[in-house]
Length: 406
Image (tube, rainbow, N blue to C red; front, side, top):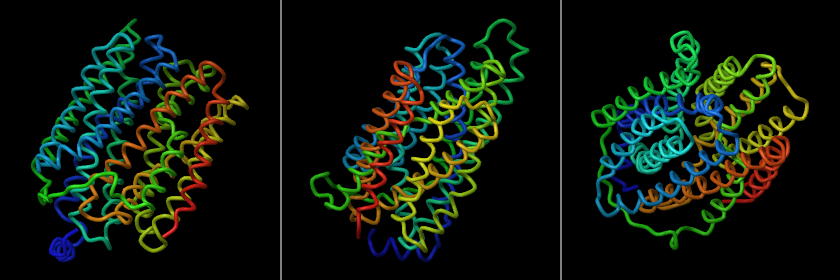
């Protein structure tokens, strides 16, 4: 970050228009696509689509997002207009929602998810770089903690309203089991459109010019990427965690009520994430980013192990499942708040966007493998084995990242 940019950021403080605008935009964006995440497993269930296909859809979507993150850095480098690309990225999310709402089988759902995640991949590294460059290095973690907390507000309110409307809409659609799900999907388009308008009006891009290639990235950062990648191979999509809760609760509640409760558990996960996001940033400022990230990764391992044990003991207790989602919220808060800021500490300012894109590419590629593998192993062998396998990769990644020293 250029010296004069740092001085401007210090003068204005960490909570400025760009940080606030990016947070509002992300909240609206999450309101849009997290609503789909929470009801998609139930939607697939009423359409008769198996768990393996859910894992494949989520894995492909994550891969599309990850590779797009890398491409977005190159495109922004050539065009020099990150804000336009971010606006396009946010605009693609409601387009994907519309495709999913119109679907009656897995193919259009896959296409809709890919379109939404392409938009997410296009916007994420550029938006993060804009936020990072809007504040000083000393306050970076607090700005990102606020941003992630605001981001998760939409992830709480959207699914919460979606779950409530899902229950109400049952009486409006008669024998059409998919009708309530489509109704919620159509409503979720509105905040997606508002996200585009919010970013357009509130966020200012400093028009930072940058160029970089992966070849020139520091060796320490490459080791860090390797550790993140191994962890990511086990870091399955939490749509599968929602499906796990739905599956465990269905025998005692029925599929619709189980889907609603599983959706509320996901909302609970996001409430936890909202609550701890800012404190995580504050703690990282005082203790260190990498140690807190390692602790968060250990919580990820605990989440996967707990999911495996829930299937092993056929848990149908909402309280126990809430504990698993609590762990998930904790580790996601740490992961999302600190992975980018740890990256920023390891690379030069002019390589920041490409480095964040590289982080996203490694993460998303690994998650493609993870989500697809967990879904397929769940269907072919058992959910117990699938989540245990995920936990193993997450543990190895955690041990590797703990060895990345200054």
